[in-house]
Image (cartoon, rainbow, N blue to C red; front, side, top):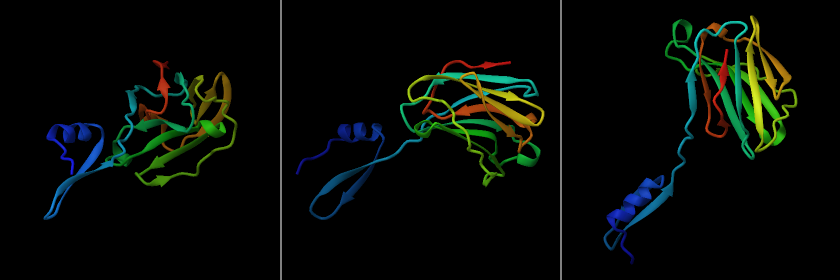
Length: 175
C-alpha cells in the first residue's frame, strides 16, 4: 500500500478537497472528496439611490450559463437582520433571457418577470444600465430598452451592487 505523506495531504487540502482519515485494524488510508467552493462575489457600495440615478455596467458575458446582478438594501427597520434583494437580474446566456425578481424577509420571493429577449451573447462584451424611476427600474441592455420593473422594495433602501463571479465586469459608472 502506498503511504500519503503529510505534505501531500496538505497539498490536497489546499486544492479544495475535504479529507477523511479512515482507519481499521490492518491499514490507514485517506479518502479525498471534492468540495465545491462558493464563487466570490463583486460588491460595491452605492449612495443616495434616488430617481434619475443610473448604474451603467460593462463587462463580458460568460461562455454559457447564468450570472446574477443584485441591488441589495440597507438592513434597517422592516428588513433588519433579514436578507433582502431589491432587484435581482438573473441573466441566462444560453437562452438570451433575463429574469427579474425581488426577495423580502429572507424567504419571500415575489412573482418573477421573465419575458423578453435580452440580446446578450455568450463571451461577448455587453452594457447593462439600471435607471431608477419613481415607481420602477428601467433596464437597458446594449443601448436598447429591455424591461421596466416595478419596485417591490423601496428603492431608497438600495445601498449595494453585487454580482457573482460568473461575469467579468469592468469599472462601472454611477451617476
